[in-house]
Structure formats: structure tokens, C-alpha cells
Image (cartoon, rainbow, N blue to C red; front, side, top):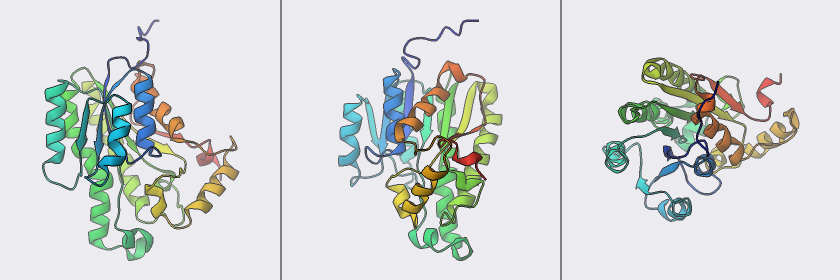
Length: 260
């Protein structure tokens, strides 16, 4: 049976990628992969400080929509999706690749994480995806794909991952429930779980370099993944080739997660 897949596989698709900080970001790998497969991009930057690092990347990728987005600022999410609606009239792909926790709460262990720090980490790293999904779904008039970035620490204890473990577990559960609720609209929802990568976000984790060395040593494929490995896996999930896959947590880690 033919899938009647256009070439390239995402030609004409409209993709929003949230979380590009620089050219080492997982989100940038996703945006670049989408573009290589023919999608048109909307890219956000966190604030004025981040804008000079993100805007040139968005320009190089030919993104017609480049906008500020701090999910903690009231009204910014709504403004972004209103602009997408006005510019494109629809949305096919949403990628949520943001996570944050206060440094003291992140590095102090879960036992000593404050209620306020836990709530902030959950809001930015998890519930913001739910809010994005609520705004994106009406624009996905012909179905679509939503992806949120997780990590193996959601399901197994990773030393020093601390509060982000429970937060990412909640994110993965949210993906499953959103997949159930949005499935009748033809919208598929996934959590993508990359192996450890040298990104700015990861720099906040204690002993992260040791985690990288350990992952490379334990991976059945014998090496670390890079942002384009993650990007092309994410792009695949958005193509018609993955049309019957939804609600999964997909690991892109060279096989590290299968090891005892």
C-alpha cells in the first residue's frame, strides 16, 4: 500500500520549535532536520539576551516566524500562537524542548527541593507543554505531531538529576494522556528521550561530564548521540511514515537505556 508521501517527507509542513538557545541545542537539531525534510519553521528565543544567539540561526534556516517566548510571562504563549494562526493559518508540528529548575533546588537533591522550586520546575518543564498543546490543537486542523523532550532519569535514578527526574516523569505521563485526548483529532503526541548531550541546559547538572563518559562506555552502539540524531528521529515521528505511532517514549541514546 502506498503512503503517497511527498518528497521531501515534510514538504509544506509548518513546524514550531521551542527551545533553541544556540547551535548546540537539541531544539536546533530538530529545526535543522525539519528544514532538511522540507518543513517551514517558526522558532522562538527566550528573551533579549538570547535573541542575538538564536536569530541568526533562524535566519539561516529561513524561518518566517521568529518570536520571543518565555512561558513564565503571561500572554506570550497566546501571542505566539495568534501570530502562527495569522501567518500560516495552521500548524502541523510542535516541539517542546525547554526545561528549567532553580539552581539551588536542582543541585540540592530532591529531599531538600523547596515547594516553590518544585512548582517552578514543573510549570516550565512540564505544564507549559500542556498549555502549548491546548493552543496548538485548534491549528492542527488536518492532524499533527507534538513532541516533548524527556530523559532516562524520568524512569531510572540518575545521580544528580534530582528534581528533574519526577518532573520528566510527569512530562512523559502528560504526553501519554495528551495522545489519548488528541488522538481523535489525528494528533499524535510523543516524548523523545535523548541520551546525554553537551547542551547549555545540561551544564547545570553536577558531574555531567562523568555522565557523558559513562553513557558512551555503556551504549551498545559505543558512542554518544548528537543533536542531529535526535533531530532526525523527531522529524521521522512527524512524517507519514510514523502515522500509526502515538503516545510513546522514544529513546535516542545508542541503546544505553536497555542496559542494567
